[in-house]
Amino acid sequence: MGDRLSGKTAVITGAGSGMGRATAARFAEEGAQVLIVDRWTQRAEEASDEIGDAAAAFTADVTSGEDVQAMYQAAAERFGGVDIIYNNAGIGGPEGNARDCPEEVFDEIMAVNLRGVWLGMKYGIPHLERAGGGSIISTASVAGITGLTGIVGYCGSKGGVIALTRAAAGEWAARGIRINCICPGPVTTRIGDDSMGPPDPARAAAWRAASAATTPLGRSGEGIDIAEAALYLASDESSFMTGQALVVDGGWTSISERWFNFSPNAFGG
Image (tube, rainbow, N blue to C red):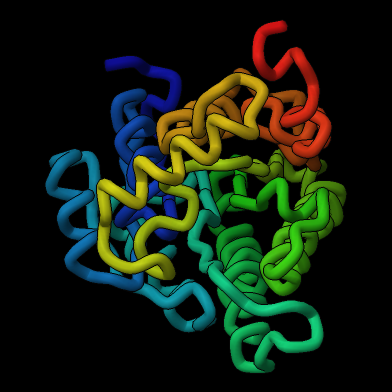
């Protein structure tokens, strides 16, 4: 047990699985009280039970302003306030190209990935003001800084998260509220299980192998990799950091995948 977040309360969305769940556990290890928010009640409760008394579960849809307000109120009533917000909930999956992507698919991705982050800021900032400041973290993606075919809505939503982060950071810095985002690369638990079906060890193994083949560090990212980055942004160690998009991708965006596959360096030569 550490004390990097001792006495602080964190609200984490999408925390019933994947990166959010790993982050909730890591925050609790460092002394935080955590409200685990997920749209799936069972997942939120399971994650909360794993942590114990330092956590509580809450069911919410991040696209609903009423739900988002209610989750912050629940955290304030249970733990006495809010100091850290992690807007992590997100969805993704096959969309088709920019012409063929159905409108309803595009709209849902934007609603969860971008509107959900904005609502998390809109209704969370007053709680951080009452606390005298705090940290807001959001999950963006490398897809928000480089083009990936077949998921134009997802790329657009994550690019929006980066821009929203930068704009809001400038608005609230003087109030002691730091606002940053994380851009994960190939992470096995990237979007959790909501949009990819039930947990599948074989699928996870295949994803890890494919990621390792195109990542300079030679492995897929794991939930704990993102959790450690979130811990840094939540803690006082990053007190001079705001408005930033922190890339955690094993070097994936540092070099073209096509060149990496061709280069002798990819094979140790």
